View 1: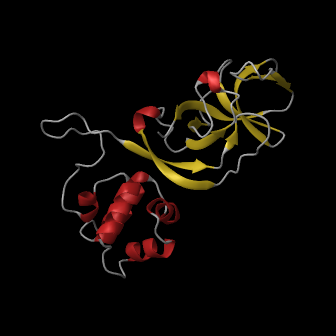
View 2: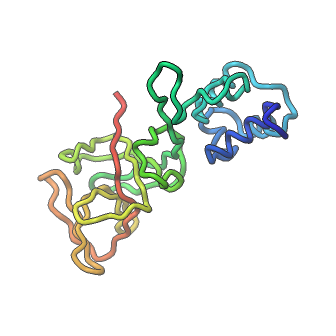
View 3: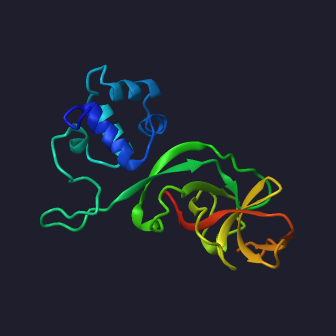
Length: 214
């Protein structure tokens, strides 16, 4: 299968982005079987609405998906007479984590979002994910209810960094201060919440950035 067919172009773009058929179907709001049929080339090319949805999920232009233009989608290249075009990464959004008492993170993908690649540390694109914060314990850090947090598990967490921490099955967003090999102090950026000292804590990942829909 080659780039001269829709199936070939779709396969290549999925490989470049690093997304599987199931995830693409979710991101494009199409059935998984539909994506597999397009990949197999055993049905006619999708209509305009499906083309736009698939292209948006892949972070490319509809023209590139259709093979009618060159590398003029969201890439690091520049267009003639214009500013550099932003590049985006497709990251999974997992279940909410709590930013206060109560609540357990559901570690399953709910959807996918395109995030500017400049937000993500170089080389960490495949390990980072997004979670939605709940609670008001980190408001002084600018983290509010419903904010989308960019989390990178492979980035080192140092004293004072904001991270997602699992304590006895409860995931929370806190500032982390390592007291000893086993003891950790978890601090809220809200004076209404006192520091918490725990002996068993698993750092899930460092919070790199918070984003908010308006």
